[in-house]
Length: 92
Length: 121
Image (cartoon, rainbow over all chains, first blue to last red; front, side, top):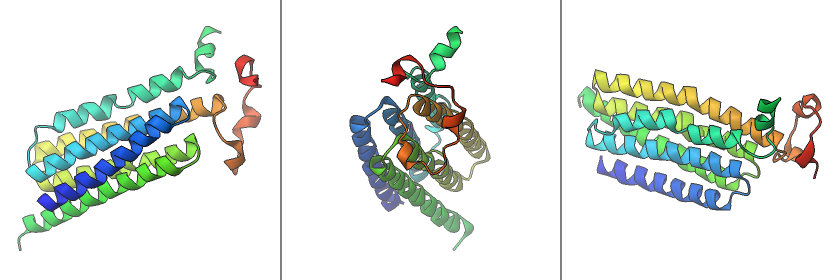
């Protein structure tokens, strides 16, 4: 089972590095927020992988919280992106 | 070979498969040209990869209360990720950050009101 942990952690680590590259490159704010959203999913996957290999349930509440609040950042940035018309629609 | 061994092997397959899906999606997010195609790639770890890894975790824990909590996590993720994707796609289209030369069908531009103010420049 340790091989699964190392293999999975390696794959997730490379994925997180690629996502960090997109976050720093990403031409617009929305590109960055999409990559950040996926980074939250990578963190959830990593915690679940560690819990599965060591057979403990300590981190399960963190999975629930992350899956609930992980989208708040994407929604708030999308709402206040300049030119997206959402903010102006409120004033009319 | 007991059924717990079978469950462990299935769990290991699920965990590695989910991590592989996440890596593929990250490559897609780095390589694809604009926001909408990157969102297409982003849904893979958010929905399928996470569900597969949670299935592997459930197969490994084999505890009804933990499995209930995992089902709740999967449900929350399935409810929240379409909301975020919808908001991001809508904002990127209205902010004019979509590459229209890459679109095959574009029915939204005709329906949207004409851009005002800062979007003309």
